[in-house]
Image (cartoon, rainbow, N blue to C red; front, top):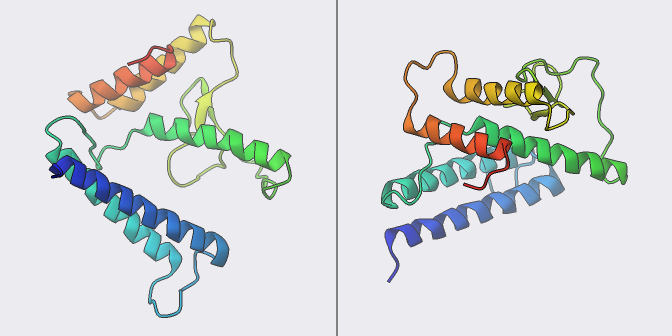
Length: 183
């Protein structure tokens, strides 16, 4: 017999599979394509499935008795930026192999990344930055200190009077990543 945690882990897997299936269809036929017999585009269907996934992640957080926590209202912007940065590196490699179309260059780059970081996306892009530390020596104490302060600013923010348990945990994990310490 499954526990509720196991049940919702299964549901998360099912929803993720559905997102992957629609993403592959959109890759082949386009985001705007409406499959015969359906009334929503691939983009609309994927949006719906992503919300279904978030609902199951939220429910898992509720039933897991503290083993899993995810607040869909408080995304981990540093983790998102780190992932976007990692994907940007693989994108550059794929482009160097001629497998992905060349970058459409804009003269204006994003200027929202914290001091000591840079974003590889265009100015006024949607969503979080694909920010990563400026190319500097990790032993450069001043550069590293600026990156740490940027992490603190990101997690606590200028409008936060009292840090939450989640923001403290996020900050701790971000600092551990910065200093290469395993949680």
